[in-house]
Image (cartoon, rainbow, N blue to C red; front, side, top):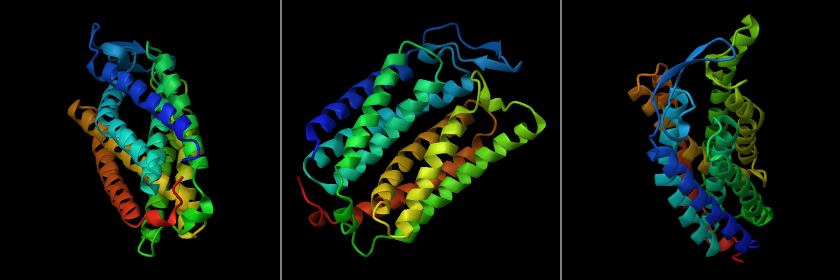
Length: 292
């Protein structure tokens, strides 16, 4: 890798800091428990009242804790394994590392801007920063022209690209369906809760979903950047969908309404993402990519 030392140092920082964040998120349980709170918009919400997420709503905490579990059990080990594979010159390792770093970047960007202020604030900020710069460096490490020829003819380009475009479109339509009616009638979405706006939906609609859609489109068109962005987006998507599925199951177990559609959608998209990742890795030709 061109930036082996920098990428390795930043990735190790991400793994160590996320280990701290997830352990605190999962295992801290101090506090008085659930209580009601009236938001600035006059809505009554239930505050979780325990642990590091004590000032978040019950619904937010029931989503953050299962994501911490997914990050701890799946994302951190994958980050470490893919780093060693990438350091060994494996193209598959670089793809997995870039995709996993993308997951950490998205995750801790959300934690930084959405989670109520707590003692992990600077940890979230450092995680967001380290993830961002390591993600940029690993992207710069790819040779786009050589990458185009690093997949064999059996790569299911239309399937992978179609999945990315379809999932981005459906999630975008879901977010629009939640926001447009409130813009028309002048109400406030319940998802705002303790925030001031729909931060997740804004980020997804402005950056993440268009990026995923574009990655799929470029891959189907067999553009050079498509062979870079689509595999990375697919890995990130797989981890994100597993995290979202865990959130849906947690909400269902907690009796929070609206969890079933989320479970069904993320199960489908997660399965398609995992199938796509497997197909990409199986059809990657290591010998076609220069080991540095």
